[in-house]
Length: 419
Ligand code: 7TS
Figure 1 (cartoon, protein in one colour):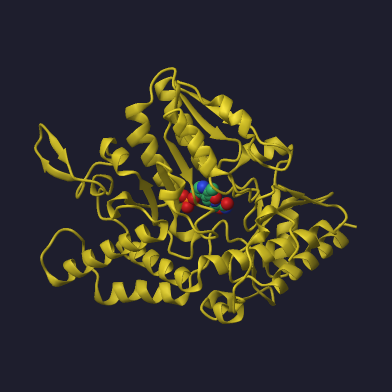
Figure 2 (cartoon, rainbow, N blue to C red):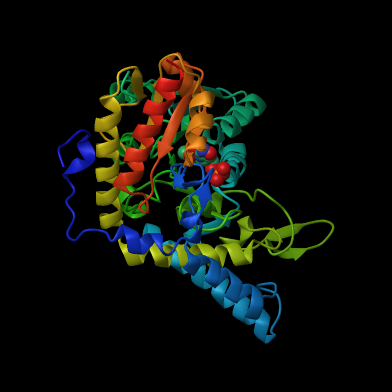
């Protein structure tokens, strides 16, 4: 494949058997409006393979009880499975210690945990939080709420017309008042892959911790938190072929130990009197109440599934898909791709001249094609490009070249209908 983006150097060491893989995903056999479903909304939520659902059901039928509480067989089994899932996630992101993996309900919950646990303790009046212009609302709003409460300020790293952060501007924003950098690994609206390793190193030179929003990275590329050296890394299960209601906050042990709990309740304590509570150790200090046990175990199964395919092969296949989609959509007169970063992952955002993205989405749906239309919970990105919304196709390893062709044919049909 020719290089259209900078990510295209990876070569396949054996082609992905996409048809076989698709057999693992029952939903992909669906017909929508009389056409085979073409599911290109994976950035919003990906589909689950049968193995994840089977694992979830096995837990529900033969292993369910509350965890960390009782000595009976089911409780001990459930605890072992839940903690086993934590170790799978630890290996998946190469965390040094399993205790650095905190189960949350998703990326949003994980970021809010850092905003409360770290932010409310360590950020004060006059302090600054640096975010990029590419952030999803969930990595903006919690920081704004904190900044308002504490009298701190948000500083924004600008992006260029291709949708890439301006590194020199970023470096200039780091100063002795900076208390946190929050940046997305991959932009959900444009697909830009940020140079996170370099940005983390620059922040660390100034002693500033970094939170990476990895929601759109973990389904598409190998993530190694020790190699990145990030202080926090957040992601969601439902975007990486696992269930909804579960996600992960990775945090360096040193920070997690210093942070205050986010939610209070059962399981996060060592002792309670009406005068005083002492908190449990990391990670339990951050997992108050009964967690989504089945979802955590399901996410562990999703890790197994993805590992079974191999992240290198996933990356190579998705690169081919994005490459092909970019070339074909670029060929369509009157269609503009938004976001042409050198390094991109799995996302193609576009606008069709004279057609509102909502109409594009509605007409594509008539062809059985699922894309997301709107601002993608990244309104500042839309503002930067002076548009209210885009249509967005986002790919997963189970998508095919034929599906990309169906998308392109669908866009042609939309253009024809609108004259
Ligand atoms: N961060 C990024 C980069 C995201 O893409 C999303 C969800 C979130 C955080 C929030 O994840 P949650 O699981 O806590 O909701 N992004 C999208 C999207 O692109 N379309 O729908 C949801």
